[in-house]
Image (cartoon, rainbow, N blue to C red):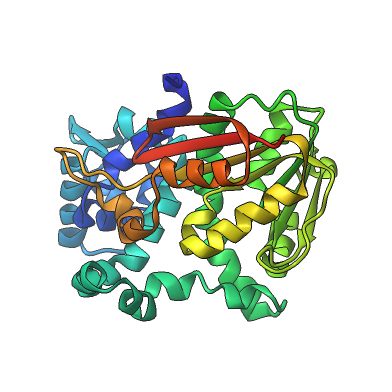
Length: 342
């Protein structure tokens, strides 16, 4: 079982439980109230002096924030609660989850029945999938760059905090050359290289994604050990010479047939004795407490998350040995599946 300190970031979901709590927090951030209260508590009059809202509107917002545990109200002063201060340690993740869930909330409100009945029809109509428009990732134009960077902000934030758990479950110390297929901004590769100074990495992704990724890691010490390979991994040759090939939160984007193609190509490019590793969410499971609003994007992807058995079967078909499966729960179930090429 992974240590608790690796999943402290999950505390952000406590403040994104409902649409009301998420929208109230978003407004507090937009109005500058959260930053205003970072250093010290303020009373009603002091907050009003800094607010663009009428007194009645500000009071309503403050009441909502107190009810949601974002603020404490004592002795006439409002302060950030200690639990919320801890959540602000992961502010990039908090804001990314908040923005992502609010952005695609209309898909759930308007199209959830469509998703339950006909996944293909949902794919055509949902804003979620127009956001992740991979056709914009081939040609570098200002519009394509901006739109791709928009969704990469969400995926990068998630990867930043999910990566250490994968590094706990799989020992990368025996590897020297990593190929991360669909490696996005390079965040996963960068986290691995940061922990293992002997590893060099290649991130394979679409051209615009690689451009943004190269910029993302450019100021990190690991940048000199990470290169980007611009290609559509479905139909382009993959670089050889790697002793581990990884897929982090990639394969759920693709139907079974394409996922099998990805895995076959990765296997063929892998050195003998090398490792193929998949890090993915497993099928969505709803506990007794339900799902928080922050997991709305994950809920809308529910038809696409596969059980570990699917990947184990593909590894067996490829003739891989030493197949290892780790299943665990973060905010949703996750799996790490690895195998060795003979």
